[in-house]
Length: 451
Image 1 (cartoon, rainbow, N blue to C red):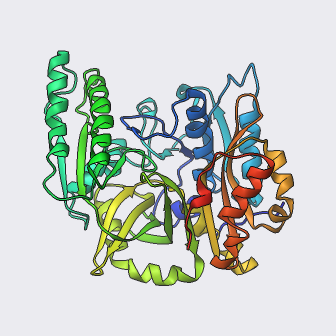
Image 2 (tube, helix red, strand yellow):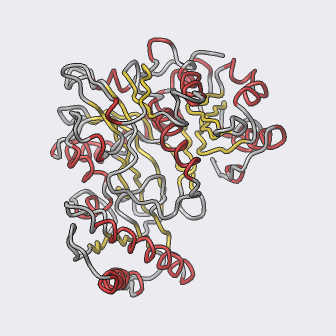
Image 3 (cartoon, helix red, strand yellow):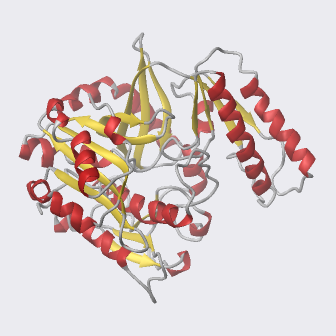
C-alpha cells in the first residue's frame, strides 16, 4: 500500500511561528448538541461513528501529535479491534505524519505533560478540567448557527427564536408545551415564501438543518422540531448555565454555487487557505461528502480571499486559532454569503492536504470523499478487491471501524481520478457498485452528482 504524504498537517500549522503546539486533538461528543435528523439511533453504531470513525477521519490531517481516542467494548477485558482499525488507518500515512495514538476509557484517564493543552473538535463538559488551546465557551459560541446569524459576517437574512425559559429552573409540563408552541409559531407563520431553511444552533453534517420548500416539508420540520424542542427544554432544566443551544434559526435559502471552504486561522488571525470543495448532500440536506478540482483551487482562493480575511479577523477577535470550515455560497448576482461555520476540522480538509499526493505526483486532478459508507464486509475484503488502487495511491481510507462482531464496517473513502469524466468508471458509481457486488453496501452515494 502506497504511503500517503500530506502537503501539511495541523501540527505544522499550529507551529507556524504564531502559536503553541497543542499536544492533543480529541473528539467531542457533548456540550449541548442536537441531531434531530440523524440517520440512525442505534447506540452501538453511533458510538463507533462518533468515537472512532470521525476522530480517525478528522485526525488524518493532524500530523505527529498525540491523538486521544476513547475505547469501545471495554478494551481492557475484551476485544481491541477498534484500536487495530485506528492503527491501520494511520499506517497509510508516511511515518513522520502519523498521529501518536493514546486510548483511554474515560476522560479522567487523560494525562497531559506539563504545559500541554488540548485542541478539541467540539467543547465537551467532561473535558473542561483540562487546559484548552481555545476557551471552550468562545469555541462553542463560534460553532453556533445562532451566533453566525447575529454576527456582522455576510450571511443570509435570518431570524433567531430563543427560549424565554431560564436554565436551572423547573417548569410544569404545561409551561414547556406553551414554550414549544411559542417558539414554533414562527415556523408555522413564516412570512417569506418558500423555500426557506430552519436550523438548530448546534449540529453536525446537516443533521440539524431542514430545507423547507413546500407545506409538506414545513409540517415535517414542525413535527420533528416540536418533539426535539421539548426534549432540549427538559434537559435545560437540569443545567445551571443558560443554554443558547435552545434556539431555532430561520434563514433565507440562497440559490447559487454552494462550496465548502477549509482553512487554518493562525494565532495572529491570518487565514491560510487549504481548499474549496463542492458539497455532496442528500435531498434532505444531510452532508454525504465533497469533491475537489485541484486545477480550480487558485481561482477559488482568489475568489474567496475577502471572505477568508473577514473570517480570519472574526475568529481572531473571538480568541480562536486552529482549523476552520465554512460553507459559502455565491448567488446569481455574484454576492457571497457564509451559510454555516464549522470551527474545527471538516470532512473535506484531507482533500486539500492531498494535492501533491494526487495531482502533482499521480496526475489525478479530481478527488471525492464519501461519508458514511456502511459495508457488509471486513476491511481486508475491501482492500483485496481494490488492492491495485490502494497500491497505486488512488484510493485512501482515512477512517474505518468494524462493528462489534467484526463482520461489517463503517468507513470513509477518498477516491481520485484524472478528470471528472473518468469518475464514470473510477469514482462514486464505480466504488459503490463494485462494493455492492462483492461486499454489499447501504450507501446512497451512487446517485451523487460530482460534475
